View 1 (cartoon, helix red, strand yellow):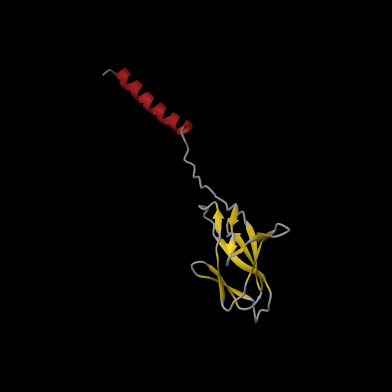
View 2: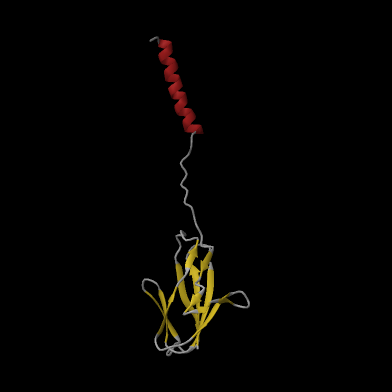
Length: 141
């Protein structure tokens, strides 16, 4: 090979490294954030229909009380593959701190145990940056 051919190949090699370094693709870290847009509640609890409140702020259901009534609290985040967790808390209940109407426990799922008749309001909220919330009032009579 001639000297000119070797010099042209070397020049093209160096130019390609410079062009790729300047105009090449930059590695960008992309972390897709999927927010919870809705929390889907069951349509029935204890055989009673869950209805939206008149003011549109949440849902309500009236069920029959019986001794040691335990209600599994079921919900589905929308979209289902959202990485945020849903936390459930009691925000209102009739009764006193010493003698509450119900107790919320969390093991594998959430369970609401009624000790006496009364009303309990549960708040579902997502732990992502959007902080989506929904309320459910359960009245045991």
